[in-house]
Length: 472
Image (tube, rainbow, N blue to C red; front, side):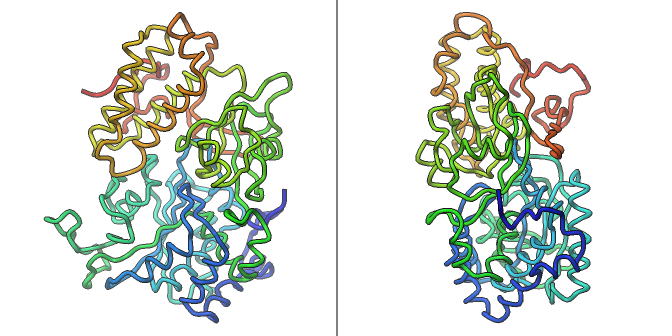
């Protein structure tokens, strides 16, 4: 595996960064000017690495074209997607490229203030990032762009772009109605037609809607390299529809959990084997999930290209390139219940069909996993899967529908086995929400099993996750 985002040894200082072409991307952007910078990024074909895969140049152009008194740029580094550790790996390896990419983005869209949102629990990454910002500011690389680091809560929805704006403004991670390019940071224009927001500290001028650009940490880390070396260089890697490399995380039933940079378009099975060593000898790879945002991928599709179009063609998606692998000892009904529970607990409750529906789905899957369900329970699950997205203001409810329904469709024989008796593969699986990943060892967040639907934590150390009931 070769690439440019994850250097062989971490970039430890501003001197090391500047010695490896650091700063050249920003210099090239200043030479080109904002419009030509966006055009170069568009030509490169870079797509968002946070999960949506939206063309980055198009996104920048859209924000730059919006009217408004102020513009802001936000880097989303709050990764909470199960199975993902790419952004933290990038921050540990080279935080300077992220900051330079952030400053280039601010220059291109006309913003003088930028923010990086990451979880307060990311202490090592936050320290590396803070040092990089200070050093780049002292070296004059940041120019007039003020960069603020915001340490936010542990909740999954902190990583949702509209919820991240709420946290930056001092609120809870509750997704707004409108996207950031329409209703951005510190906006005083009414968002829902009847209520405006007071200007925050240090933002006392006329603000209106403030178009705001939000990009993932990996997306921004690509930017200085593209500007320094050119769009044509970037397109020498990957595929026509998905140029470049991607930082993939592979965990679960594998020999050596890890993070690696691979060319987009590499066969999925090769990514799994190269990054993690594949499943253990004697075991068979049964299923792969790209976080909880996409449909399950079965063993029949392991040769699919690891790209946006390649995984879409087999009914799934690239997501944030975090792969959770299960071998033939895993119960897929348990997998479905576990991820449904994760989404139920992490749902914010602003959209009742999402909170209620994901809770009812979780409860039904728990009965199925215990061998206590009937066909009526399956009908109830199917009914809630149809209604769970009603009125949703973020993607979480869609994730619930997609991941649960895909597993039940892909493994009907396991559904039947659970209807006829107890689980044939009784094995408690960890929720793959990653706390740390280094040297082939992964640490999962064991507290996640104790997290309740109101975002508090149960005091019981032996909480039975299968007993969680939906709120009334």
